[in-house]
Image (cartoon, rainbow over all chains, first blue to last red; front, top):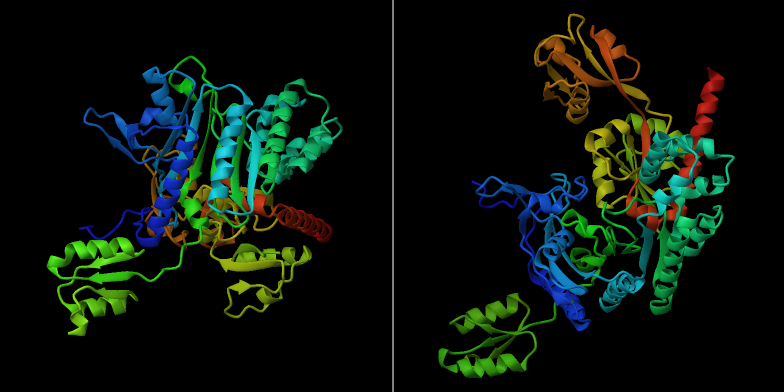
Length: 381
Length: 217
């Protein structure tokens, strides 16, 4: 019998923690609605094929079979279900969605990590231009500001930068692949060995710095400026620069960084990607980006899409919990229900005391450190 | 400035890495006279904790420490997702397939292999297109073929002395092993300058160690 155990990687949430989480979710949802986003709710169960584009390493799903023997999963992600909806319903574009819910990812057993995570986010579908990317950034950073989360760092990156640059290098194809792999894994020992043939080329000073090419936006851009002119990079660099300027103008307190040494978050990303963290968090607060290839898993026609999702659990972790303010207990007789309701609405943080006996009510008040209001005047008798 | 926490594998890795850390300018006095302590903060920039090898990634993945120093054997067995940034020239050894001399690797039967490293063993045999039964052993793996628990073992050897003393011989060489410096992905962004300079000074210390070894030889 396992009727007293939780499966590994799950947890119950109650009291203040659960309430803070609910408050945060509601705040986010209200913010999305205020900006004219519409709600989209998808089921927790989906066919496993919906998530085929996800990198299986970090998104190992819980699997089960439906009655026909088709493999189902508990959704490990909330973006691909949106793509499924968009490609099957003929909803007119452009459209702005918001969503919220739990995703399930099986992580290493007994490692202290949770397999059920709560996310809330938006998807903007059908807008090609940078404005859509910027609205996502606005939503992400305004969200953090509204939660009073300070010292936010936003890291910009681009899904195509590494591939465009690797293409320019005069190396045999297998070396290029190895170099890219070592760059992404930050395996400096292997990277330096593979990059040796580039020592005398115009790329050398860039190549030396590449694995460390993240951090302060302007510093990273200085290293990019050492590159010989590459036509395909111009557009990417311009997008990144104007986006950094946009953030600095609207959110001057946010630290803008750039990472040009990481892989695209998923295979379907096509443009800028970004994620936010603080100096103390052990995980990212939000992540998102442009993925114009998102719908190509479901249909042949490309559709512009950009989105961002908050890790609600990470926001909870970074929120200071309110002190337990003293509560008020209202003790009353059966026939005083209306009076009790009136008292309930008068006091903040009050609750009806449902004991029949005044002595029990007194004990309860003492043990919960509450003020006791006695409508029966039993204490005076 | 906040200290960087380093999880160092205790035991042989610790013995080999402490001189490198010292050569990189890190005060390791506490570790040298540790008694029963497990946390060392003699150097104001770092907090070094001593943990068992398989626990290094657990601490690193949770973000409780920013840097781990651990053998590549453990990284390969546990499937590491963090940045293994630097190879150190210490803890060098190799995985081998070993058994008694009458073992026939070509025998047409499903072999039984004992090991502390079931994932590495599985991957090796998958790679050569063979399916084997794996028995996980916690220590003294050499015993398994001698006592008849398994047909052969997959284990790490450094000098080969233990194998020879137990009348076992090597039938195949698998991947090499060395000690690696692993960095938590997010921590690298949060502590970029400090980690960059630590990696640089460790790499330099490691180079010097190689040079001095070459000179001695």
